[in-house]
Figure 1 (spheres, each protein chain N blue to C red):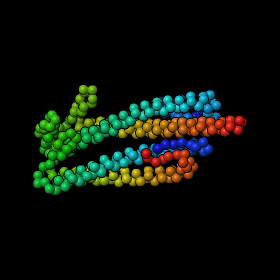
Figure 2 (cartoon, helix red, strand yellow):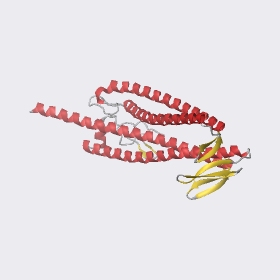
Figure 3 (spheres, helix red, strand yellow):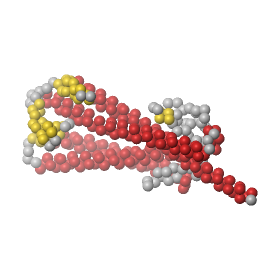
Figure 4 (cartoon, rainbow over the protein chains, first blue to last red):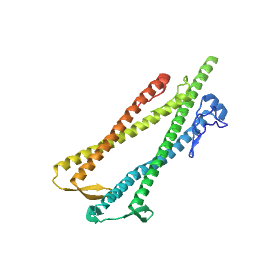
Length: 194
Length: 126
């Protein structure tokens, strides 16, 4: 995480220049200097920034979708851990666990789960593996920790992205206002000359 | 929420950071409101469940664990529900506290930003 100034920036952009493929928004200290140094006129600069904004929005939607997936996955893993824990608790007692489970939508059936040392875990991609209860609990816990860690990174990415969006929006507004201001000055100067 | 600098007020990096922070806090505030709503609903459901338990005279309750309904004796169900209520209660308290802190920070930032930019900036919900 280094703060650096690229060769075409106006001033040292405090902050990251990019994060995990998301380009950082360059902070503009002074609009006049920015426009001179980048060699863009007002309209081109505004167009460039608008396009950047669209790109940011696209990435934001992608990240939000990923976040929703992860947030749905985590309670599922917690439920699985619950079941494994319950089975383990029943193991010592000798009595089986009687459950009602869904056979089809709206249809339930009763099952008696006897003393069992192993459970089968659905790993995805049409693959199911049998594990001992302890191994299953360990695997599920690891998956849960990974999911939570990924979610944290994702949230940080989203925050970075939103900051860049805000900076870009503020820069657009400033350039636009500066342009309006300049036009007014030119009008006043032109009126004085006549 | 819109941001802008007037032609006469310059936006410094510090101002930009304040604006960014306000945006982040605002987002977090909305997320917290949603989370608090869900937590309150869960709490209410648990309340209803434990009330039903008191009224019922069955000895074995079908308690949902994962995707199946396990036959669990009434006392164990009562214990589990009490524990779940405690967890959601603590969670709700934590969320409310975070929401208060976020609101306080946002009020501070509003003061600073309105102080510098007055009418050039709008920090209200539309």
